[in-house]
Each structure stands twice: as structure tokens, then as C-alpha cells.
Image 1 (cartoon, rainbow, N blue to C red):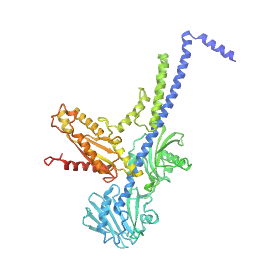
Image 2: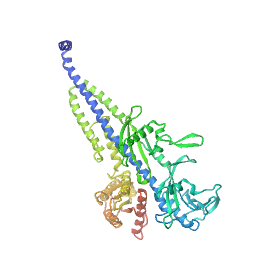
Image 3: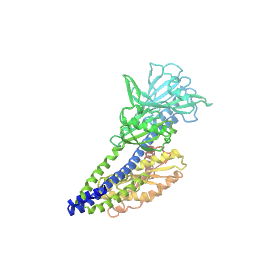
Image 4: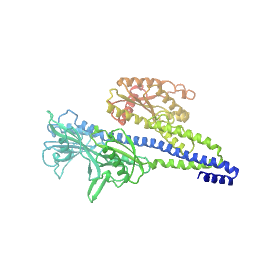
Length: 593
């Protein structure tokens, strides 16, 4: 048998020309190497995409969780404003009406969207509710006797006169309402009612309740505020992931709170609506993703915590799907899961195109010059190894070391797109500072860290407004204006400590995050230091502006948690403090900018 095979090879060699005989083994070898490179390219590209797509899903889950915590956590602040902890229930709702309506007005001002309705009922059947439907207009619902209907009044402003009384047709008995009974039936002071459907709007709603005691601590009544959940659905629908990705928020039993596509409420019959369970969703990916997370939790493979996790699974059709998930902070009193899932094919489509194109180019390379194949093979192998190493660094959370890009094909485009995305997400292109999105995220992360860990060191947010930039652009040109902004950013960065963040917020505005300060005096000292630095003449104007041309900058401070407990309120207070400080320190004959 070996002799027959040897004879066949000799016969084939005898029929080939010398050129063909010398070329054929190398063609086979190079084609084999091309096939090997294609396999390595596919595996390296797949590993890279798995790492980066998993990180993308994890970050998306984290952003959704953070948004949910901000949206839901405000209800506790509203109830605390309406009935501060330790304050006993009123002896007589009618006698203390003025005090109660003032507190309720202030409470509904905390998070008027969505917590615009605060109400209270006691064990005697008395009821008081304030519903804010605009900044100045409200409706007061009052029942001062233990029976009968409520009277509805209109009022304008916090101390506005109660007018246009209307007695409701139906009797409203607060003691029979689910929110009242839920509060008294649970041992905790704060509770959530089950999610229910508002049959007027068909939106999901839940109610946060707070049990109110009398002077001796006995349950006397219940304060509550409604939380519409349509904003959760809107948040999920605004997400931009991949073409077929889906994001959802579900309760532990699978009841949908919100979903990025499709319905979360179904109609059984005209006028009969009920919530949709993720395991019964007509959307196959919604059902598959929830079932995969539920199976993992049921198998005891891990405990679903608040830190985002990712994994892969196969759906009913055998397609690979990547899913990220996390539990909402249980301190909020909610048993909710955030799940984001995307078919792996959405991420791998580019890699597949890369492999096909690489194979075509390699085939042409074989035809044109076999000798260059060895060189190309060494270059491609080295580049793939560097790209895989860079992908592993990104997967380990090293964001400041983007992948090095040496290739010009689609695999290089993939690496460049991730590197460019990281750079754009974190950096202002003109000044090299952090940009608006980056500083907002850092402040939000700092607030969340403060809440979860209870750090004893407060932090400060500083708002900086650079003056006369428009005048500089007009008189000396935009190139000089850009140079002024760059130099201002360098001075601000040089004037703070390592660990503090300096960002260009918008145009001629900058925002600084002083990561930890002892007290307000430390923040004021930092402001004085930076103001002194900014009073020095700018090098960018040395050759173009007159000697008496002074730019100047205004600084405003907000200290967490005294001046605000979220990013928006901190920035708003810093902006207001900047104007107040500017007026206080301006010369008597100066005009406000």
C-alpha cells in the first residue's frame, strides 16, 4: 500500500513542470497558513468582541441601576420632608391644617416629577392630600371627619387661599386603601405597595408609605406618595445598544416593570388589563434572557448582587446570546432585576466580515508573492497578539490604555472604534480635560459612594465661569479664544490635588470635583487659591491684548451633602453660589456680567 501511494506521487510529479513542482508545495503550505491565520483572526476577534461587548453590557446595566436608584430613592426624601422622622402624627388634622399643607407643599417640591402627590390618613379616618399639577397650582383633598366624602380645594402658591370647594360624590375611606393597610401590616416604617396599573393612563404605579406614630410611638396614621413608573420604560426605550438588543427591569417573579421594546401591560378583554410576565413575553429574547438569569439564580451558581455580571447562553434556536444583569440595591426595599441582552451575532458581524476579507486578501497575496506571505504572517500574528493583550487589559478595567492600532483592515477599525469611543467619552477635545459626560458620571459615582459607604469626608463641586471669552473671540479671533480656554484648563488642573477632577463643562464653563474636603472652609480656601491663579495674566493674550485687559473667572461652590444630595442640585447650587460670590466680591461701581 505505501509503495502504491509512492508510485502515484511519482507519476504526478512526472506530469508537472519544474515550476509547478516547486510552486505546489509552497502554495499548499501558504494556503494552510492562511487558513490558520483566518482561524486565529476569528478567535482573536471573537475574544476581543466578547470582552468589550461584555463590558458594554455591564456598563449599560450599571447606568440603568443608577438611574433607577435615583428615580426610586427620591420618594423617601419626599416623605421625610412631609413627616420628618421623630415628628409625631398631628392630634387634629383640621387644627394643624396650615402646618401640614406647608410641609406637603415643600415635600412635593423636592421631586415634583414624579412625586407630585403626597397624602396622609389616620386611624380616625381623617385624610389630607396635596397634589401639585404645576409649579404654583395645586389641589388639596381634605376629610376632617371620620366618615363621609372628601372636599377638594384649589390653591395657588404655598400659602394660597383654599378656594372652589367641591365635595366628591364617592366616599373615600383611607383606612380601607391598600397603601394604608400595607403600611400597618409590615413591621418596617417604610414600605412599598405592590406595583399596580393606573387604569386611566395604563401606566404602572407603586406607592411608598411611611408609618407615622403618636407621642408614645403607637401607629397613628400613614403618609404616602405615588411613584409613576413610565419614566423607567422611557429610559429603557432611549437606550442605543445593538440592532436586536433588549433591556428590561423585572421583579423577582418576572413581572415586567419596564422593557425597551414591546408591551409590559397586556389586555385580556376590553377594559381588563394586567401586567405581563417576562417568561410569557411574546418577544423571544425577553423571555430567553429572563429564563437564563432565573435558571442561574435557581441553580445556586451565584447570588445576584448589585454589581453587574455578564454571561453567555444559547436561546431556543441555538443562537448565542450575551446577557448582563444586576439587582437593584435592596436598601431601597425593592426586589428588582435589571437585565440587558444582545445576540452575539450583533457583535460578531464585523468580525465575520473581517475574516472573509482577510482570507481574500491573503489569497491574492499567495498569487502575487508567496515570499511575502511569511512576512505578512509574522506581522499579522504579532498584531493579533497585541490586540488580544489590549482586549484583556480593557476587560480588566484598564481604561487609560487603549488598544494600539497598527492594521488598516476591519479588525483595526474595530480596535480604533473602541479606542475612539473611550477617548470621546472621557475627554474634551480642545482642552484635554474631562468632558461634561465624564464629570457628571464622576460626581454621580461619588454621590453613590458616599451613600453606600458612609464616608465621613464630604466632597465639593466647584462651578467656574470664564469671563470675556466671547469678547476675546470677537476681538482677537477664535484661535486666541481656544488658547485662552486651554491655558485656563491647565491652570485649573495645576491648582488642584491629585485625585481631583477638572472638566470643561460647556463653552467657557468648567466644573471641578474636589474629591474630599474637611469642611466648607477647605473648599473656600481652594476657591481663593484658584482665584489667585486666574488673576495672573494669561500667556495666550500676551502678544495680542493690551496690558490692562483682564479676563477673570468666577467660582461657585457646592458642598455635599449640605448643598445638595444629587448631581443636578449640586451643580445648580454651585452655579447660584458663583453668581452670589461674584456680586459680593465685585467692586461697588462694577456692573454685573
